[in-house]
Length: 288
Ligand SMILES: Cc1cc2nc3c(=O)[nH]c(=O)nc-3n(C[C@H](O)[C@H](O)[C@H](O)COP(=O)(O)OP(=O)(O)OC[C@H]3O[C@@H](n4cnc5c(N)ncnc54)[C@H](O)[C@@H]3O)c2cc1C
Image 1 (cartoon, rainbow, N blue to C red):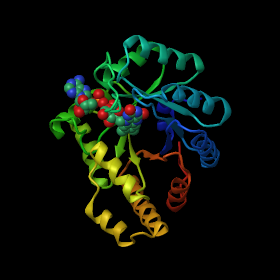
Image 2 (image 1 turned 30 degrees about the horizontal axis):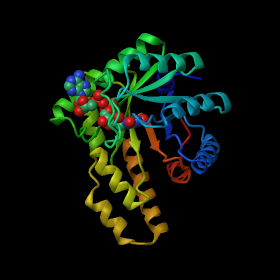
Image 3 (image 1 turned 30 degrees about the vertical axis):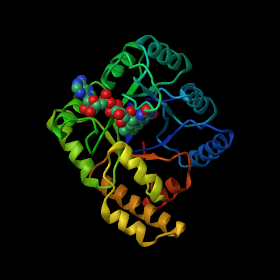
Image 4 (image 1 turned 90 degrees about the horizontal axis):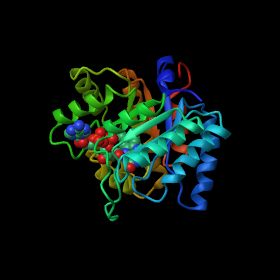
């Protein structure tokens, strides 16, 4: 196992994100994806945490399984939502005892239809502090290139993200489709005195329906020019995929050219889009 803070010092970082499967079929898909993506030797991989949901225990199992059965460095996502402080202490302590060294500390978005109690910690920064108290972890946080939907202004968003990031080691961003959103975030954090690595989150738009739904949920603008390009190829699924991958590759290249310290791919537990983008970017050299 390795600490992501150390990996980030070695060069560009390329990482993949997965979510805990809910069915045996999805479980099989993830298993295959992990095998296929391991060949790319990612800098690390991460597993999401279903805030308030039923898959929470699965995050622990999958992260520990990755540690024990693969060559990849793993990071567990953890959210404040609907948890008491004591529960969070227990979860983080179990990670420490299992040898997990990386935690992504998040506020969390519990499903709106579940009537869950509020979490004892209000903001992700409090979880960063808690995790630091429990062990010698490398700690990441979320950042929102297009400000978080609950932020009253862009300025407050940048301010609170900077205050959070100064206590963490690195940030990973929500996905977005225009490189300028990422550069605006980085400039905003620097203006607030914080210069730690911010890894852009990449979600290739290979399925118009699901990507626009996800973008709406998390407050990302789905640009007209991209929607037009995708609609132009209409019902031809392969052509839609090609546009999505070509545009994601273009975005990745612009981010790397502009100085991003790496890329974080939202894989949705599939490997093909990520592998294609990797190949088109000609990646591996200088990777941490
Ligand atoms: C890379 C990545 C991975 C993610 N993984 C998951 C996951 O596994 N599970 C999941 O449920 N969700 C996940 N999310 C979504 C995330 O939980 C949501 O975006 C959530 O609504 C906010 O999380 P946060 O960590 O940014 O929260 P916070 O940092 O707590 O911020 C939430 C809001 O509060 C404001 N704020 C923060 N601190 C303060 C303060 N001290 N005073 C006043 N205002 C403040 C912020 O500006 C923001 O508007 C992920 C997001 C990203 C980018």
